[in-house]
Length: 116
Image (cartoon, rainbow, N blue to C red; front, top):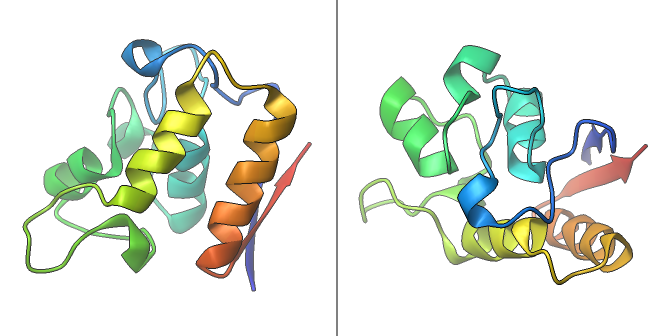
């Protein structure tokens, strides 16, 4: 099983979708941004991008798991991605629940997540 670690000190969460990016200028990353780095995207490719579909469109390469894009429908974010972003970014969810949800979601696609 593939595995990656989300460092809590760099993890961007709970600040609302308007403030969230895969990688912000201040170095904070949402869970999908951390996963994007794990998949092989560079900071330059992730910085100030709001969703995986923007990264895929701008780099013309998809290094994310197939659950992150919908083949045949253009480059759009899937329901899987949209739900992950909603849980990661919501200011109304506890970190305990957020971590549990993220672990379970990634486990569904064969990826193990640790938080430290």
